[in-house]
Length: 317
Image (cartoon, rainbow, N blue to C red; front, side, top):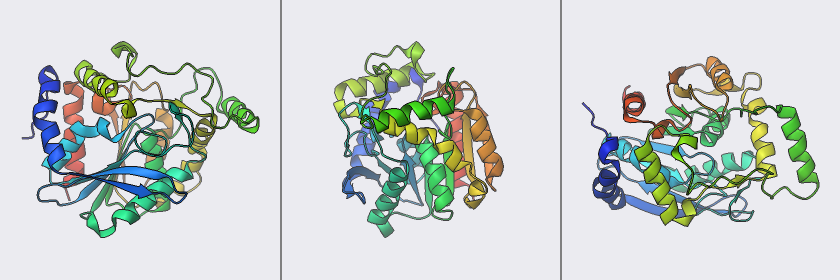
């Protein structure tokens, strides 16, 4: 019977138990992307590894956000490779601090390819994939291009399409393209910047006050963990993910068994696109979770069964 951290003593257990273990098996390594961008990567080695999970984080996240999840993977004998995506955390960026920018989503795919090449045979096989939100969209696109790299994949609330809240996808794309053509590709979109350090829990995408507070403290203590606002170029690229990931026959190229976790109370990404995608992946299982977007930051009642599903999925033949 697996044991998981509980909310009532979450911060204490993270600081006294989890972080010392993670520090003892962690190795950092810079990897240079195809265009010269330096990517910050971090490898956690399990004591007796029987595989490696590659984690692709979401928008405005960093590797540090996944400490609790990494701890559970290590206990299962799974090493972990995680990295700050370009424009995030300690990886290189083209735009101003506080602006998440990418010219095209294929840059994210290329980055993952380069990182896997840089680590090569040092990663314990088999390789498993975990992608959340934006990282889930990137993971889906990567799997469509490289159908046999990963043995299994878990996508958590993947960003296969956004929710538009009163606007249409076409109107949003036209606005972004106009701003790009007028020299604002790297500028922040015309929305209020999210205050990650002072965001009220009620406005967050988490269900666990304890996990949310712990993450917020980490962001206040480490400036590189702070989030940002998307650039117009990033937004235009994100708006094109749906058409690419759902293009005819593309999902059928994915050979790896997939567990897709869809958050029922998601207000950021489109559940309909997730269901449509999963229906066309040959070996996909769609699980609906009673959670907001941040499934790994749900309360114990929701999260613990989800963690068991993920770990069983990775470790069961």
